[in-house]
Amino acid sequence: MNYPNNKIWEYCIFLGTFTDSLGRDLDLGVFEHKNDNSISYAVASSDDDGDYYSGGIHTFPFGSTVELHDYQYETLGRYIEYLRRGNR
View 1 (spheres, one colour):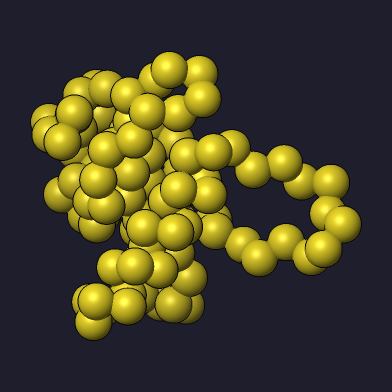
View 2 (tube, rainbow, N blue to C red; view 1 turned 90 degrees about the vertical axis):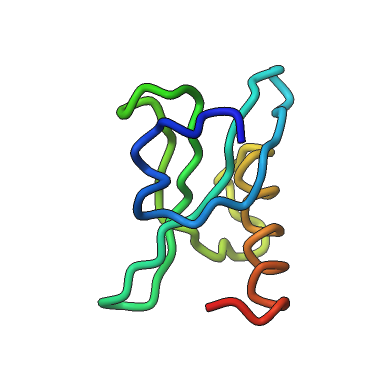
């Protein structure tokens, strides 16, 4: 874990480290919203509490103009593996 002191790890699931296409070292994770069973990205970029990326994970239709960042693809893939291992 690159940023263990970032407070998001008190309530988010850590999925591992990742270096993105811009060379940033990131900690990948998700937040599971219990009220509606949705999930959000939780991607820390430093130990500072407010220094993270977040946002809902959505399924985009074929042909969508929405561009995802490589860390978003990686986070989603790791979360799927997390679920396949029987976690939840």
